[in-house]
Image (cartoon, rainbow, N blue to C red):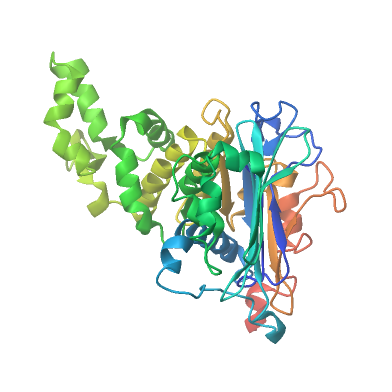
Length: 427
C-alpha cells in the first residue's frame, strides 16, 4: 500500500511536494480507509485521493511523475547500457533549476514491512539513492545507501543473499539505479516482492485507448470475471458479454458443461468480443426482440472507456494494487462517477488494500462523498510552480457541514481562479 509519494524539480514541480495517504484524525467515512493488518492494526491509510485543480496547474504532471519514476526504476539498467545520459525533465521556468538534481521518493507497505526508497539525479549521474525498511513501531534501518559511487550495504541483507548484492555493484554505473540492477538479479531477499508491487501499479492516462490491450488480457481472465460483470450490471449500460452467453447456454438451453462451452467460445473470448444489447421495436413501438452491437465498433466513447476502466480497476482490486487515473470523470455521467468511487470504497468490493489516485474536475464528490482529507489541490503560483496540498488539514481545517463544493467553486479552497468570471470576461 502507498503511504506517500514525493517529487521535486520535475516538470512543473520546482520544490519537493508530497502526496500523502495517511489520514487526518477525522471520524467521517471510515469505510474509505484501509487497515494494513499485517503491518499494524492501528494504522490507517486512505483508499483513494481525488486531485482537483485548475487546468494546466500540474495535476497530470503528478501522474507523469509517477510514470517516470516507475519506468526509470525498472529500465535504468537496460537503458544505461546503451546511453550514458538520463532523460531528465527538470523545472524550466527558473534557470537555476535546470542543472539542479531531480528528486523522487516513495514509501509503501508490503505485508509487515514498510519500505522507503528515494533517489536524486542529474542528466549524467545518480547523486544519491537509498532504500530503508522498518516494521511497525521499530526504528527505520537501511538496506543500502549510495552517494555517487560509494555504497553502504546492510551486512545481514548481503549475507542472506549469499553476498550477491555486493556483486551487483559492479554493474551499477554512475547513471544507473542500483535498485534497477538488483531487479535483474535472482535470489535476493525482499527485492522480488518490491519489484512485484511496484511493477503492478497501474497508470491510466487520459488517452485511455492505450490501455485496451491490458483490458483485453484482464477481461479474458476468469479471475476478474465476476467483478467486471458486477460493474457492468451496476452501470445499467445494456452490455452483454460472451461470458453471459456461456452462462445462459449452460443454464437454460443446453445440458452441457461450462468447460465445453468455454472451448466452443474460445475464439470469441480471446478476441475480446463484447456486445451491447438493445431493444428492437417495430413501427407500432412493439418490442420484437433484441439487437446486439459490438462494443468496439458501435458504442459510445464513454461506454468503451467505462469498460476499459472497470477491467483495470478489477485487476487493481483483486491484486491489492495501486491505480492512478487521469481525468477519471471524462466521458462519465456524474452518477456513474459517483457509483464507481463509492464502489471502490465499499469493503465488500475492495477488501484487501487496493488504492486509487485520480484527477477530476467534477465537483459532485466534494460534499459527503469523500472524506475531507481525501481531497487534494494541485495549484500553480504566478512563478509557474505547482504545489500539492490537502483541502483539509490540521493547520487549515474545513469544519463539518460546510459546503466544500460551494467553497471550491468560489476559489476559497484553491485550485480554481477567483478572477474567472465566466462569460462576463468577454462583455
